[in-house]
Image (cartoon, rainbow, N blue to C red; front, side, top):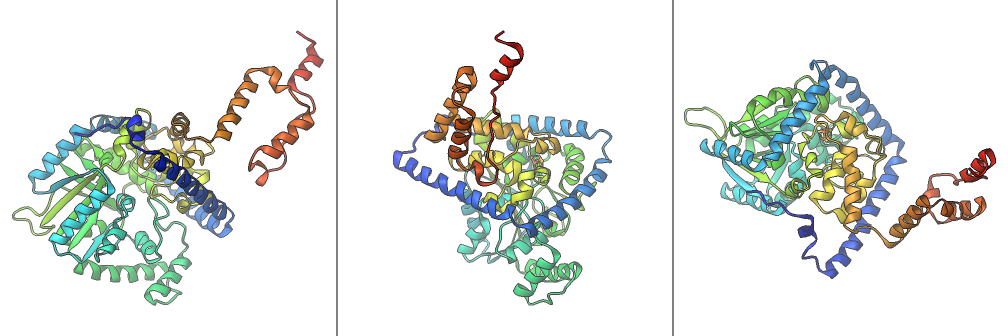
Length: 484
Ligand code: SF4
């Protein structure tokens, strides 16, 4: 059974020296975010590439939406299905486990990233594995699987083209759906020339053929294939994988052993739910009506079947998800189907890019879940990186109230005491002034201008001075209506 952790439990057991360390670390994660954001937002070349790629996405999404009679109803229905699935997560997962185990797959429950990595390593060592082919999976980014395997002399090769480009460049994915979104075709040609010795003037088609040829060799060598799961199907005990290149299907089926690594929130109750979720994910992810390859895997090769892996393992990862489950308000964020639409719509993401977040999940959904998956104190700054325009909520495939959840995170962070003395005092003074008119009228316009422009830290860095009006609202009122 899944264990719920209360917010108090999360705070207990942290000694004071640990807290000191945490306070220090807070400054590092937040200041790292601010400096990376400042650098990227001033980078015109980056902005041009992102605007170009998001522009292409925006141009095709309306076409995908046309397949729905009522797109809002479809989103609402998907939200309700996920609500039902997450509300009964423990029994749904057990149903999945019973179904897929019957056909010979082994299900492993991992509470942490370390446990998941150790289990994968154990399987690889049993199979005497030296080489792995892996399809795109944000969960494996979350647990830093490639780095971990490399430390144990196991080569793990990314087979999704975008991920392969990022791996060649030694960079994490930039976006949860399009990992190399920040690179132009010229950037990729240059990278291939540097790393693979190809002609730097190759076209995208020629580059794809180079990647294809290199990766086909890797499939032949690999003892193990690793994939994620877009959906875990409870009623029939299966996983569903969605992709455009066929590389995930090959990673499932070609090597002798298939390992699936998935977060527990990917659950959907029934096979028939895919009729809604597949087109919804395709439309909001890439503007397609349906993604090119949609595969349902129900277990390893069965007697009498000609292909498929001999062994199949499914790692069900918690890694902080039950913290979100226990939090009544944040729970809704577990409905996410990782379509990436909220990233593409976010004015902050479009300016600072995916790498500024320093987390596998970036953009609005990343800012909502990361403080819960990791810890609020160190990652709360992400919840403040929002204009609260609500565009993320507007475009979310499953209607998650993202901007409200960002506000909830801020609220929770303040409730947990993750604020400095100066901030607490500033808000106390502001509240007092707002509740008592006489405090608002204290001081002349000149003094107010001086105090605000001198003492509000960071305000003037990118803005002009604040100019208070010469006369206060009270004065104007009195002049017009007298003392009534
Ligand atoms: S929060 Fe919504 S829009 Fe963002 S990735 Fe998840 S499903 Fe897509």
